[in-house]
Image (cartoon, rainbow, N blue to C red):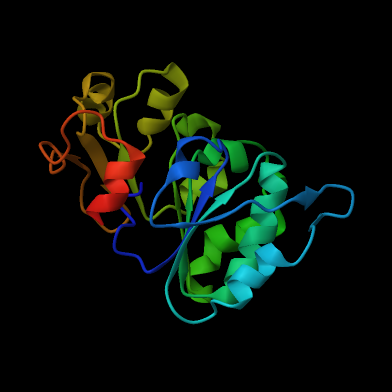
Amino acid sequence: MIYEIRNDKRVVLLDPKCGKLSKLEGWDHQWPFYDEEKNIWLGKTFVDYFRQRLRGPFRVVVHLRNFHPQQLNMLCALLMKVKNCTLAIDELGVFVRQGPPDALLKFVQTAVISGRHEGLKFLGTAQRPSFVHGTVRANASAMSWYRMTERNDLKVAQDYFPKALADSLPSLPDHVCLEWSDGAHEAFRNESLVGKFGAPETIKSDAKRR
């Protein structure tokens, strides 16, 4: 995903694991503290970070340890006021888990359905697409599917790809994906990243390439 947003100038990268991304070089890092009883972030540091960047470039990793759906909801509301930025979410299934339509919180739903009208670009990764809320999948304008083997995920893939392509997902080589786009006439196999990466890359080397 970092490769996909390498040219975006105003980016919020949402990190639920608080692991490798906490060492991402060349980015600011924010660790908001959430009060679940009051449904607020404590202190002013986090909100002030964005208030001071209503104009101009920024690239920040926001590390969230818990209450992921609630904090994503608050962040969507905030970024739709900041405008003209990209919200990139690692592990969408942690934040927008599959469920009934009303399971998607208000500002998340607004960001997903009409965020682009507020200048908010919404994208993310998911190891398990079947865990991602249906409204999020239904409003996607493009998807890249890499190798996967779980039965429920392969079943979801059948909604986007012809049978021959969907059946190839479990055996896709590294760095090869299937591309689906709302505006394209047909899905296709994308091998354009083959050879661009050597051994499994580190977060550090990816940051230096930008």
